[in-house]
Length: 282
Image (cartoon, rainbow, N blue to C red):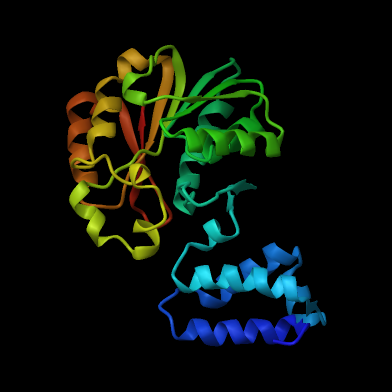
């Protein structure tokens, strides 16, 4: 390749390579990689005559080679936009999904309805995207985020520093062995896939999202049963629990289990497709 190459020409070369792959949303992901690496807008990408030097070409080639083998673009650029902020999401971190924003919306609705200071716990916090999104809006409350992964806690603390949020304490802990009490708002987006479902996952998910963030290595219900059955001992009077539900066969088992414990004090919040996405227990 020449010592310099026009960016527009380079993009076309990469898109031709991607056409032979099974990568989805090829153009969008390619633009994300280039915009992130060069810190430019989409308009700059297409309307400015930008030349790439040899180092930039080598760096971008490495990123596109990762894309060609279906590495999630959020792991390639190590960044994911969630709710209203960008979060660091390096390889080995569960990538925040857009549907989880309903969990944040539901929490904001609850916090907005009270004037008292709240104690808020986010279980399986991962990158910290849920609790940090909420804490940025309501810094006067006390927040705790826990995860059993040391790496996840490291990343969550980096995101906390990036967003300049002081009201969250991140702790490495297994929720099944963590002392949970006096909580006003409990949030959780738990691993919900049954072990047998793992083999049917898309390669980009199965090979890149941490396995422990996807499955409970059992039937997919263990986190839900633990939280639902312990609601009264975990949550203060007038407090609530918000748990994200999967769109999978296990959701029906969770709903039936919840009916035994919380039939009269729980509701299901629906996503934009009209599917039950969050269970609210109060």
